[in-house]
Image 1 (cartoon, one colour):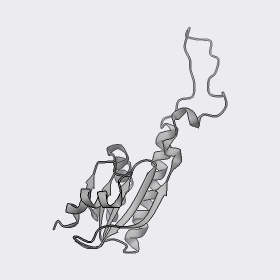
Image 2: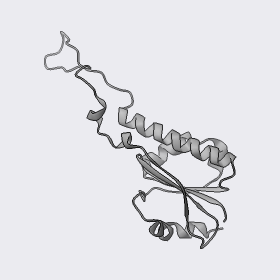
Image 3: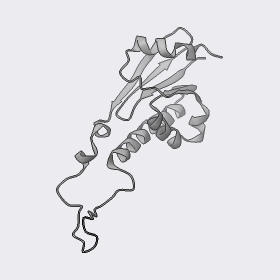
Image 4: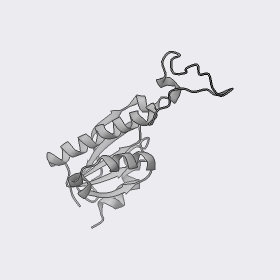
Length: 149
């Protein structure tokens, strides 16, 4: 395998590496931080609006409920940003094959946003959060993937 792109990410941080063959390690191309994905749900609420006085149901506490939570929305935005980068990189021939390493939920968000041509280059996925690992530890964890035919 040669010219492999490796995206190591979670919902709030990501690093994109390139590997140019078995035993050649990983070279960092770019990285991202998305701090809004780290916020707690309450951090997205401003002011006291959202609850309304109703005349029904003793003890009922109606309020605005989101179909998708603000935190989930931020994760989706970050996933879309990363997928956009992957798709542009594919068009620029930055990689011929792709490996994505991400926790299961965020990996699912990425997969659902990938276009078909980029998805076809997806060699492997690994549902782990290795975002805090050093490059040498990542090479140790992922090195076998670079040497498979």
